[in-house]
Length: 183
Image (cartoon, rainbow, N blue to C red):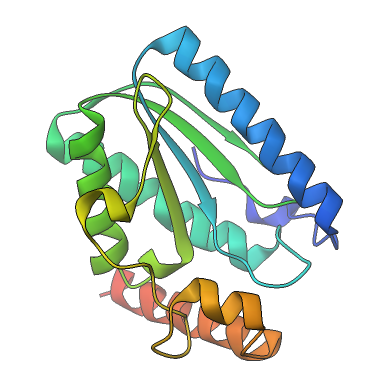
Protein backbone atom coordinates (compact mmCIF):
# COMPACT_ATOMS: atom_id res chain seq x y z
CA UNK A 1 0.00 0.00 0.00
CA UNK A 2 2.46 2.70 -1.15
CA UNK A 3 1.77 6.39 -0.78
CA UNK A 4 1.06 8.13 -4.05
CA UNK A 5 3.88 10.58 -4.52
CA UNK A 6 1.96 12.88 -6.84
CA UNK A 7 -0.43 13.91 -4.08
CA UNK A 8 2.19 15.21 -1.62
CA UNK A 9 1.00 18.47 -0.08
CA UNK A 10 4.40 20.24 0.20
CA UNK A 11 2.70 22.24 2.97
CA UNK A 12 4.77 24.19 5.47
CA UNK A 13 3.84 23.01 8.96
CA UNK A 14 4.48 24.73 12.26
CA UNK A 15 5.28 23.41 15.73
CA UNK A 16 1.66 23.40 17.02
CA UNK A 17 0.63 21.36 13.97
CA UNK A 18 3.47 18.89 14.56
CA UNK A 19 2.53 18.53 18.23
CA UNK A 20 -1.16 18.03 17.34
CA UNK A 21 -0.17 15.41 14.76
CA UNK A 22 1.97 13.56 17.31
CA UNK A 23 -0.92 13.57 19.77
CA UNK A 24 -3.34 12.28 17.11
CA UNK A 25 -0.85 9.53 16.19
CA UNK A 26 -0.58 8.48 19.84
CA UNK A 27 -4.38 8.35 20.08
CA UNK A 28 -4.54 6.17 16.93
CA UNK A 29 -1.85 3.92 18.37
CA UNK A 30 -3.83 3.41 21.58
CA UNK A 31 -7.01 2.68 19.59
CA UNK A 32 -5.15 0.08 17.50
CA UNK A 33 -3.63 -1.54 20.57
CA UNK A 34 -7.11 -1.82 22.11
CA UNK A 35 -8.64 -3.19 18.90
CA UNK A 36 -5.93 -5.65 17.91
CA UNK A 37 -4.03 -6.57 21.09
CA UNK A 38 -0.92 -7.09 18.98
CA UNK A 39 2.52 -5.60 18.54
CA UNK A 40 2.23 -2.28 16.74
CA UNK A 41 4.63 -0.70 14.28
CA UNK A 42 4.28 3.04 13.81
CA UNK A 43 6.27 4.28 10.82
CA UNK A 44 7.19 7.87 10.01
CA UNK A 45 10.03 9.54 8.10
CA UNK A 46 12.76 11.73 9.58
CA UNK A 47 12.26 15.01 7.75
CA UNK A 48 14.15 18.16 8.76
CA UNK A 49 12.58 21.52 8.11
CA UNK A 50 9.01 22.75 7.88
CA UNK A 51 7.91 20.62 4.87
CA UNK A 52 7.22 17.06 6.00
CA UNK A 53 5.01 15.76 3.17
CA UNK A 54 6.94 15.94 -0.09
CA UNK A 55 7.81 13.73 -3.02
CA UNK A 56 11.11 13.02 -1.24
CA UNK A 57 9.54 11.95 2.07
CA UNK A 58 6.88 9.87 0.34
CA UNK A 59 9.45 8.00 -1.74
CA UNK A 60 11.53 7.33 1.39
CA UNK A 61 8.35 6.23 3.20
CA UNK A 62 7.46 3.82 0.39
CA UNK A 63 10.87 2.15 0.63
CA UNK A 64 10.36 1.78 4.39
CA UNK A 65 6.89 0.32 4.06
CA UNK A 66 8.05 -2.22 1.46
CA UNK A 67 11.02 -3.17 3.66
CA UNK A 68 8.81 -3.66 6.73
CA UNK A 69 6.30 -5.74 4.79
CA UNK A 70 9.15 -7.87 3.38
CA UNK A 71 10.61 -8.25 6.87
CA UNK A 72 7.26 -9.48 8.18
CA UNK A 73 6.90 -11.93 5.30
CA UNK A 74 10.48 -13.23 5.65
CA UNK A 75 9.99 -13.63 9.42
CA UNK A 76 6.62 -15.38 9.06
CA UNK A 77 4.82 -12.61 10.96
CA UNK A 78 1.18 -12.00 10.18
CA UNK A 79 0.23 -8.39 9.47
CA UNK A 80 -3.22 -8.28 11.05
CA UNK A 81 -3.99 -4.79 9.77
CA UNK A 82 -2.18 -1.97 8.02
CA UNK A 83 -3.11 1.64 7.40
CA UNK A 84 -1.29 4.53 5.74
CA UNK A 85 -2.09 8.19 6.30
CA UNK A 86 -0.84 11.25 4.49
CA UNK A 87 -1.25 14.31 6.69
CA UNK A 88 0.65 17.51 5.91
CA UNK A 89 2.94 16.58 8.82
CA UNK A 90 4.33 13.64 6.83
CA UNK A 91 3.39 10.12 5.77
CA UNK A 92 2.55 7.63 8.52
CA UNK A 93 1.72 3.95 8.72
CA UNK A 94 0.43 1.67 11.42
CA UNK A 95 0.84 -2.09 11.19
CA UNK A 96 -0.55 -4.55 13.74
CA UNK A 97 1.87 -7.48 13.74
CA UNK A 98 1.27 -10.91 15.22
CA UNK A 99 4.78 -11.34 16.68
CA UNK A 100 6.64 -10.64 19.93
CA UNK A 101 7.38 -6.92 20.23
CA UNK A 102 11.01 -7.39 21.29
CA UNK A 103 11.73 -9.48 18.18
CA UNK A 104 9.98 -6.96 15.95
CA UNK A 105 11.95 -4.06 17.47
CA UNK A 106 15.28 -5.88 17.14
CA UNK A 107 14.50 -6.65 13.50
CA UNK A 108 13.40 -3.04 12.90
CA UNK A 109 16.67 -1.74 14.39
CA UNK A 110 18.64 -4.10 12.14
CA UNK A 111 16.61 -2.92 9.16
CA UNK A 112 17.26 0.74 10.02
CA UNK A 113 20.98 -0.03 10.32
CA UNK A 114 21.46 -2.08 7.18
CA UNK A 115 19.21 -0.34 4.64
CA UNK A 116 20.71 2.66 2.86
CA UNK A 117 17.60 4.69 3.79
CA UNK A 118 17.20 3.22 7.26
CA UNK A 119 18.59 6.30 8.99
CA UNK A 120 15.67 8.27 7.54
CA UNK A 121 13.03 5.92 8.93
CA UNK A 122 11.48 6.19 12.35
CA UNK A 123 10.13 2.72 13.10
CA UNK A 124 8.50 2.76 16.53
CA UNK A 125 7.47 -0.59 17.98
CA UNK A 126 4.89 -0.74 20.76
CA UNK A 127 4.14 -3.76 22.91
CA UNK A 128 0.50 -4.90 23.06
CA UNK A 129 0.40 -3.13 26.45
CA UNK A 130 1.46 0.17 24.84
CA UNK A 131 5.11 0.43 25.89
CA UNK A 132 7.29 1.96 23.19
CA UNK A 133 10.49 -0.04 22.84
CA UNK A 134 13.61 2.01 22.26
CA UNK A 135 17.18 1.41 21.20
CA UNK A 136 18.24 1.88 24.82
CA UNK A 137 16.06 -1.11 25.81
CA UNK A 138 18.55 -3.17 23.78
CA UNK A 139 21.65 -1.35 25.12
CA UNK A 140 22.20 0.39 21.80
CA UNK A 141 23.47 3.96 21.39
CA UNK A 142 21.30 6.83 20.18
CA UNK A 143 21.02 7.30 16.44
CA UNK A 144 23.69 9.34 14.69
CA UNK A 145 23.27 12.54 12.74
CA UNK A 146 22.73 12.33 8.98
CA UNK A 147 25.81 14.46 8.36
CA UNK A 148 28.31 14.03 11.21
CA UNK A 149 29.19 11.63 14.03
CA UNK A 150 27.24 13.42 16.78
CA UNK A 151 23.97 11.99 18.02
CA UNK A 152 21.00 13.12 15.96
CA UNK A 153 19.31 14.66 19.01
CA UNK A 154 22.31 16.90 19.77
CA UNK A 155 22.61 18.15 16.19
CA UNK A 156 18.86 18.72 15.91
CA UNK A 157 18.71 20.61 19.20
CA UNK A 158 21.71 22.78 18.26
CA UNK A 159 20.63 23.12 14.62
CA UNK A 160 24.20 22.17 13.77
CA UNK A 161 23.62 21.73 10.03
CA UNK A 162 21.78 23.87 7.48
CA UNK A 163 18.48 22.43 6.31
CA UNK A 164 19.74 22.39 2.71
CA UNK A 165 22.68 20.16 3.72
CA UNK A 166 20.33 17.71 5.47
CA UNK A 167 17.94 17.61 2.51
CA UNK A 168 20.85 17.10 0.10
CA UNK A 169 21.98 14.17 2.24
CA UNK A 170 18.47 12.70 2.16
CA UNK A 171 18.35 13.04 -1.64
CA UNK A 172 21.78 11.40 -1.97
CA UNK A 173 20.65 8.45 0.16
CA UNK A 174 17.48 8.12 -1.92
CA UNK A 175 19.57 8.17 -5.10
CA UNK A 176 21.74 5.38 -3.64
CA UNK A 177 18.61 3.36 -2.81
CA UNK A 178 17.23 3.88 -6.32
CA UNK A 179 20.58 2.81 -7.83
CA UNK A 180 20.67 -0.34 -5.68
CA UNK A 181 17.06 -1.20 -6.54
CA UNK A 182 17.69 -0.93 -10.29
CA UNK A 183 20.55 -3.46 -10.22
